[in-house]
Structures are given as structure tokens and as C-alpha cells.
Length: 214
Image (cartoon, rainbow, N blue to C red; front, side, top):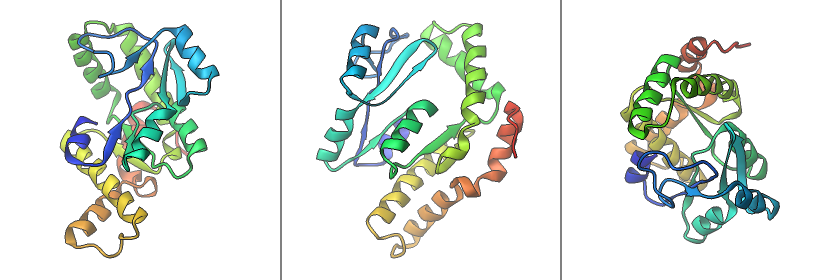
């Protein structure tokens, strides 16, 4: 997310609200908007969330005003959310662009979680095993997304994400077929990430996580 935002202009990033406590060096309003469960549930009752979900006993959500503020500035809104929240966004905004970012294997995901736990000092092996089980459940929903990225090499994943944003903007502005060589290259990269074109890179991930396919 940070790399994408540093390379692409016109993007607003929504800082999610959550009822969990800060980890490590996390700061309020920068990493999350930390609040109480009571306040979060009141926001739900007031209809203040574009999407929200309960994950591992804590609420996470995106306020509707984040979308309003981004659009008022003429910018696109970038959300980093789980499959529950993404499903809500797709129902409310059928035109939203959805990108499923999946890890290449359970082993690599576990190593990344352990590295993060060392930095945060707050994630146990039990937490990691629980998150691996959750990851398998989420990966089973990959068919609901328009684009699929496998985050094995950071630079490549960032390049693909940049290409998807550019390609969707070209289409929205009616310029998809009128571009130069650079534009065409971005369109080709983005097209290769469409779910319909992603079987070759997705199948090894599904097998690694033990996800059954039809």
C-alpha cells in the first residue's frame, strides 16, 4: 500500500477504525482510528460505515465519510480490507475495483507474520496458526474479485498494482485504446492480473493452502 501510494497520485487511503488496541509503534490516526467497542457499535447503528467486519473478536471498518472526502477532492479511495468488508463494498458500489492480494504459501505467510510479531511484540504462535486458518478461508473467496495478485516479490506486486490503477483510470476516461507504448504496457500487465487470466499463478497457491478447486 505504501509503495503504491508513493508512485501513484490522486489516491486517498482510508485509515480504518478498529476496537483492538495499538500494536508496537502503531499510532492513532496514522495506522488506525482506535476506539471502544461501544463507540464502534454506535457508529454501526448510525449507519456511518461503508463497510465493517468483526475479525478475531475485534471490529474493523471504513467510514462512509472517507469516500465522500476523497470524491470531493477528485481522488480515488484505496481500501485495505478483508473479504467480509470487500463483499459489502461490492454490493453497495458495483463499480468498485476489487483486487485480491494473496500470499504465495502458508510458510511464507507464517514467516511474514512472525517478522511482524517481532516488530510488534504482540503476536503468538497461536495467533499465527489462527491467522493461517483464516487466510485459507479468505483465499476460497478469490473468485469474487476482479484482479488477483500473488505477493511473492514485492516489486512485481507493486508494479502490477500500479498497472491496475492506471488501466482502470484509462478505461474510466475512455482512453484505453488511444495510449502510447507505455500505456499499452500497463494495460497488458493489468490484463494479465484479471481473475480470468490468473489460473497459472493462482493454482500453486490454492494447492499450497489446501483449497479445493472445481
